[in-house]
Each structure stands twice: as structure tokens, then as C-alpha cells.
Length: 172
Image (cartoon, rainbow, N blue to C red; front, top):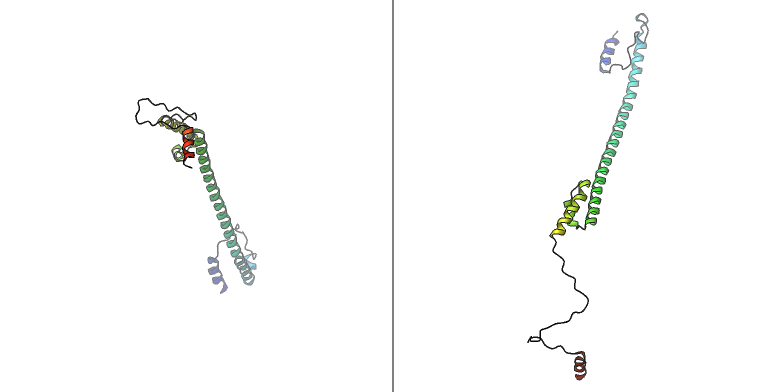
């Protein structure tokens, strides 16, 4: 009978069974109780628990690893979506800038909202065009006559091509 206090002390350390309680004890009725059979049953159950605890821990670790993998993939997905949104905004800015003749310096002025980029680009191009000075008339490739007033004292007569040729051959 010394085994019974030991059994109860060790049973307190173990977790309660998760299965529904049996109405009859596993060894049969109280009249048929065999302490040796009960002790073997307890030892077998303890050894099974000892074998299952590391397996349960491995399963929990694996589930945590899978959960961490899932969270890592979720984070990568969110990062990819954010990068995609930034690229779409940048592409919309470049399209609007090309369409309206804006410089790279003006891209930041178009904002981040793809719906407003086109509108802002139109307004900015209109303001730049209104503020720009009138372009000077492009020089014509057609030669222009040098008209001088006849009484102009500082104007030297231009040498004719014959005079220039004669001056060149004279030196040799």
C-alpha cells in the first residue's frame, strides 16, 4: 500500500486526460483491483507521454516555422505591391511629362495620385507656356544685303573678289 501515495503525487504532476472520463476504472471493479497491473498501466502511459511530448514539441515548432514562412511571404507580397504602386505612379508621371513637354525637374510637381497627374501636368504645361518669352525669329539662311547709308564715315568699302585675288598674287 505504499505505492498509492506515490501514485497520487506523480499523477498530480501530469496533465489531466483530454479524453472523456470513463465510468469504470481501467483495471475493472474495485474488488478486482490489482496494484501491480495498475502500476504497469501507469508506467506504460508515462512512457507514451514521454515519447509523445518531443513529437508534440516538434509539431509545434514546425507549425511555428510554417507560420513564420507564411508571414515572411505575406510581407514580401505587401512589399511587391507597394513597389508596383510606386512604379505605376512613376510611369504615369513620365507619360504625362512626355505628353506635355515637361522636364525631369517638374516630375515631383505632378504629385503621387495617378488620377491627378494628368490634370496637374496640363496645368503646369499651360503655366510654363504662358510664362515663356516669345521665341525670337529664327535667322534666315538667305543672305541679307548690307544696306548702309551713303553718308556713313565709318563704313569702309568692301573689296571685290577680283581685288582680293590680285592682292594675293601680288605678294608671290
